[in-house]
Image (tube, rainbow, N blue to C red; front, side, top):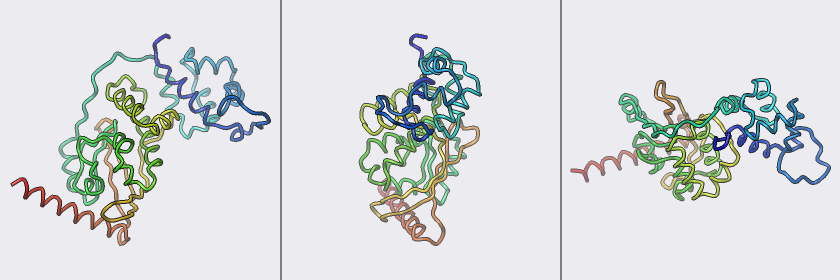
Length: 281
């Protein structure tokens, strides 16, 4: 066991510390030395022995049944036990390997360039792999070669763009964990997590929570320097057969003030594109 990653144990411990006794109906009559639930409390509520639960957290038992995992997920108030099952099935670290190169199919890149909404392709590491001019008008960081995690956590201009920057950052981290899953020997994963852990206290805090969530749509409010506050619906759609690539598009309700502002952004993007073409001649 020595030297092997204990993904299941790390996740259980982090999530256990986020659940309070009150949330599971345990009266808190005295001061507690540990945050969240004690191991024996999780075991009791899940209907398993404290010794068995301890072995799970310590990585000494890596083959729990689905029934045990479902019971623990219920106690830890996990919305989905799929990620928990994936950690339990990850027996050992694979040999180090090269980062997998992500490429956008040409037809998909062409489709993104023709969309009338701010749109881009996001890879499994949250790299921007393709983007149309409207996306870059919404944020100059939405361009090929940028990374959403780095920008949201390390770029003050990108942070200022979001009315709720901490919420956006938390959603990105949870989506990144879901996207990468148990593939922790991936050099790209190691590079990103290491860099952000050193450079961003907020990232360290969010990463320690072990939040996991699918990359899904949401409503996002931007504080844009050119058009002011603009509220857009964001869609995230998986690209079939593309290994974790997502199409991300922002749109507004037709006829709304936000739609008018989005139209103004389109005009700004078109003007910028013409100026770029003239300077290139």
